[in-house]
Length: 141
Image 1 (spheres, one colour):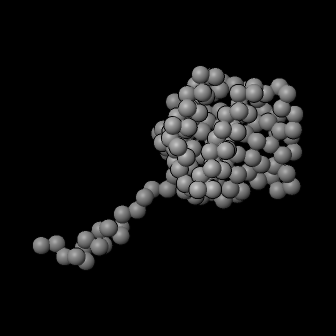
Image 2 (cartoon, rainbow, N blue to C red; image 1 turned 30 degrees about the vertical axis):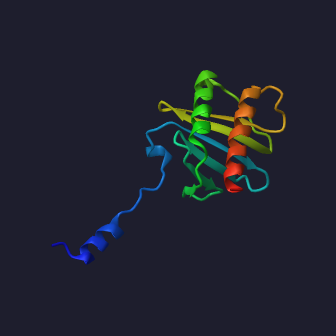
Image 3 (cartoon, helix red, strand yellow; image 1 turned 45 degrees about the vertical axis):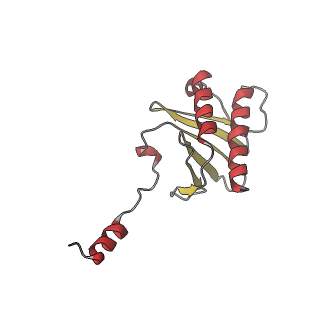
């Protein structure tokens, strides 16, 4: 018979592996903002399953946040593919900026825009706003 102490030790030794984008094999999106006086960024990593992880400032850890609806996450990933955003080149950060980054099928891209948004595809800012509002809604539940 297995002792209850051994079972308890076994359960306590189980530990979830922290999110690490460089080792994550699925597709994900990142939205965030940065710049200004500190130059720091806030990054929200969003997986296809709707899992959300926050990396803030110079912190190298990814803090688990409340999930967003996975249908929204999947729709956003479909939009990225349909618009071929992994091949879209735009980097005009300004002093304070927003960004949409992605890892799709192992291909990475980052789109950055600042004060002058005239030349950026409006579908990108719409996608950013959709994801950002989903993050805000989950925080207000």
